[in-house]
Length: 188
Image (cartoon, rainbow, N blue to C red; front, side):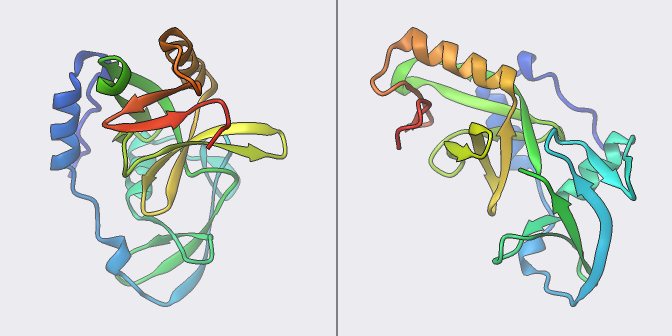
């Protein structure tokens, strides 16, 4: 079954994005508990590039497919899981990267949707929080995607968020989305 082409985020309203998110069906990886079979020889680099046996996976459709069977285990490790096998996968930082932002409204009425490097769409809100986390090389912004999986927000998208937040002059510096406030200055 061929994968659907990715919609143009800029041409979608947030209501259309919400409808697409409601229609999306992911495999029930949380219900699959096969025995661990070994290592997948796959790695997700910090920049969101997927590798297999040291080579980048060039087929976008393959990356999109693998991303749907990715799961974070209780111990913090990552696996690719199907009903019959579970394979470890190395994730250098976050398994996804938020590469594009769509925003509508202002202040408390704002809603923000993000496109991930896999083509997935995520709307920030109470269930998909934005956090600024301290790392060894400084603070980095993350977006919760699903079931403990996060997206590192790309630098350009973070700058876009900060410009919006500074224009709104909230104290602390931050933005609202779907009724939740997200501080972008490192305060919690």
